[in-house]
Image (cartoon, rainbow, N blue to C red):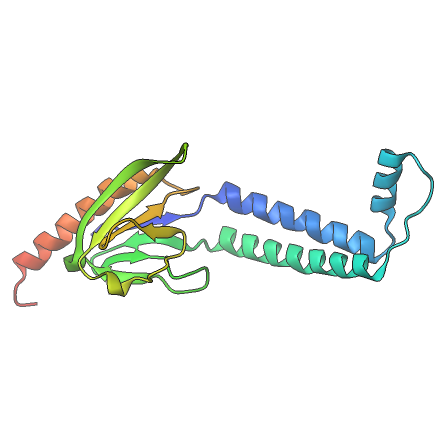
Length: 190
């Protein structure tokens, strides 16, 4: 049986890692010699004076290094082994809506009542989303990560920077759900 998997777009993760490199390098420059920051100050202010850094500047630089390293590690990990935001197989639909470090929640196909894609106008901003209707919403968090409840049983997952178009994902999930339902009805003894 076919599997459906959706991960975050590699471009966003790559840009996140690049931002982490910039933060880490700027922080290291302030903590060490300050040459780049001094050259930047000279370019902007036209002065030869080397800035003196106060303790708060060094604390900020240390936070920038730590934050930059976290972004680099997170980005590289996500590039090497991307987290599946939506995945589906014979057993059901898995949604990563519990948080950035939580495991994906499994919803059996028997509890998924409908799947669709929609373009929603949210205060002038068009959002592509996957709508999943479930029988038992208690399986999913009441405050889902990168998603929201739009009805008592309907979860809207924003398809921002997905690796695949949400319309194709919805179609593939419906096909998979139908195949799993037919398989379950054909094998009543299992």
